[in-house]
Image 1 (cartoon, rainbow, N blue to C red):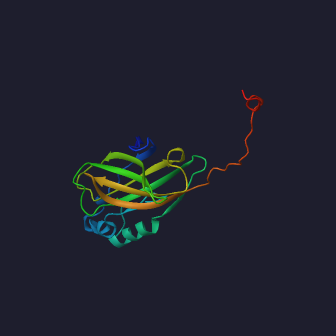
Image 2: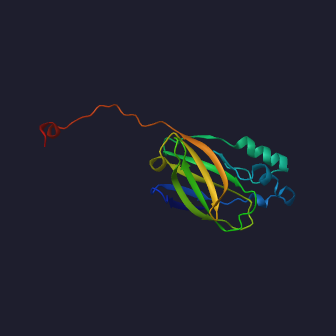
Image 3: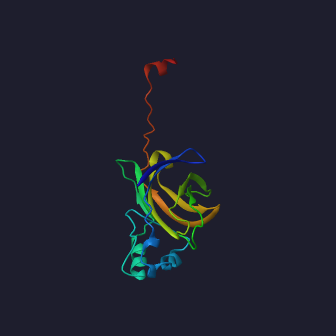
Length: 184
């Protein structure tokens, strides 16, 4: 696995992407294509690693459906969210480079939080499995996010999920030093 620090193109935010491409295309040839037809254009997310194979196509698809989540609770100690994802494309990427983008879609307006480029092993991939770590100090808390994967400027897969945690609490109480009260 490679550990890469990515910076946002929009606002200088960071995400840690621990990348281990486990290609679903490596499953037995008989199962090639079926998951891509069921999930084509979608990004599934989970708090656990996604399987890369199963005894049958239907069992594999069933495992993916059962494992997907839509909400992630913050690791309070680390102040981050670890998100595993499985992206499926309707057709092969036809390129070795793709872009992952994360948008905050909590309010009425969509704001780009993160954007970073990654590379695949093959231009014939129709899916990829990986994970990323979102850090609170860069993405905030209690947000609804849209994740996209783009190839050659076209969105090839999307997925939505929420990152949840305890919001900062402010007492409203302010303590002034003696110098502050004297006007210094």
